[in-house]
Image (cartoon, rainbow, N blue to C red; front, top):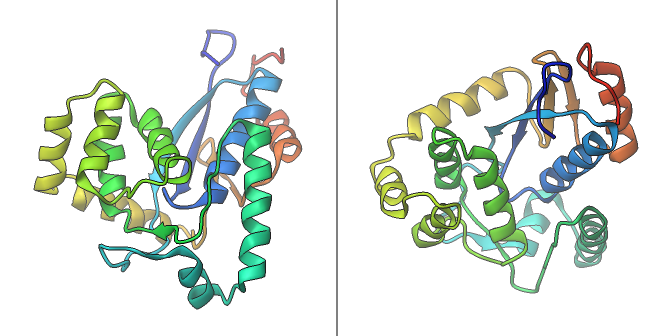
Amino acid sequence: MAETPDRPALRVDIISDVVCPWCAVGYHQLAFAARRAGVPLDIHWQPFELNPDMVLEGEDLREHLAAKYGSTAEQSAQVRAQLTELGEALGFTFRFYDGMRIYNTFQAHQLIEWAEERGKGHEMKQALLEAYFTDGKDISDLEVLTQAAESLGLDGAEARAALDSGKHGDSVRQREAFWVNQGIRGVPAMVFNGRHLVTGAQGVENYASILEQLMPTGCQTG
């Protein structure tokens, strides 16, 4: 939804990780509610690592969740089915599979920041969510990240060089620390207009209610 003089965009900072399925669901629920309400959004993706100490080769996702949260195989299967159903209703495809792995996302966040400097941070975030959850790709792999940049019409060699140099590493760490210092301990977390914090994937109706309350002056519903 494009911003117009009589319909200013609502800024939303979304703190999230690339391997967080509820972050994908939460964003698409918000976007659906915004389209329905005719509210243009100014999305700013903020980095958060669910597993900052994740080994480079990643871990088996089901084993990781069992160790971290105590999830049983049955609980994991139920959540995967729920996420798949939610995603389908929102136009996002989750393809969970046995042996699926969870990866280190530090470089993925650096790539998003690099793309943001080129006006495509939002598109890069979406590309990486799709690469991981839909296509089952290793989003810690430099080749996968380079291909994601090229898929958006960006210079793959330039992206690879930026990742190799780690030039955005300090900035990503600083931004992560900022949000942790603001009390963010889990994601998704959304900050509307820099003031109103909403945590978790709230559902389309709840987001619609939030947007109605925070709608910028002069914004008309469609």
